[in-house]
Length: 326
Image 1 (tube, helix red, strand yellow):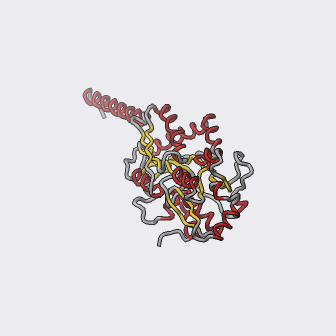
Image 2 (tube, helix red, strand yellow; image 1 turned 90 degrees about the vertical axis):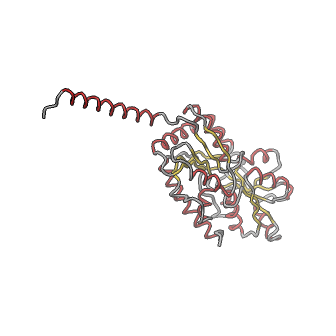
Image 3 (cartoon, helix red, strand yellow; image 1 turned 45 degrees about the vertical axis):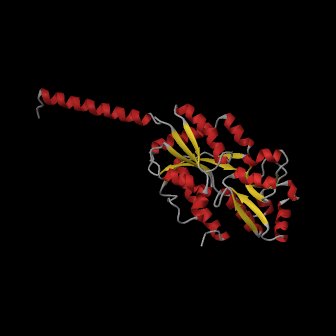
């Protein structure tokens, strides 16, 4: 077929336009981010999710050339923050920083305003905290066995605090209580700093807190750790692991970042790689080791699988402990 000069010119122009568009599209994809990233943290300032956000966020900003704006939206075991992110545009500019509370809440509450699996995509798993069973020295308790004995002597009169119903601190304390056969009363607060202060003041008797937030008060002698979850830590080598006191009482779940379902996979992978790079920095590793945080970065695909596994595991815990609302 013969092509006249005008047709040939038109085809050349069309090819040039197509090439330009393709190049522009590729450049647009490579330019992420082109505006600030909003990181909605499901708990108050001072908790582990917030600590991780403030370690990772500024360094990510330096690499990406855009601010990572940290927004603390605590309450309802993390569901307030999760609902905000579930309804955000799936463009990679709104992320959720949460803990194992996300999976726990999915197990505890069947009627959430979002679907914990269908409405979210994994961005990265960051790792998991060492948790401490803490009391105030004024309680006169020196071991977990003494705390258990006190609760048996005063059934229903011992109070334990958490960062909200369905939070990781709540479910860990419930697992301890259930394994120990304790009749203790749960008191929910907005975050870890709030219930830790109540324990120091003696208005709440014990709780399961992240070792990081509790560390300053432990060092000051205002809190006493009775057990560590899931393992002993070199920071307090004489404090036993929970399985040494109550075999079978453990901890599941990770600190992770999530995005609205449908966010571009390439963007999620880019963010995940940046998080892994930051977690490998010597100063970041040292800071997290000092609060007994175990670094375990994961890809978006691995995070999706971990989330499904965590929800299934917590479903069993909730059923075994009889915690699901009737």
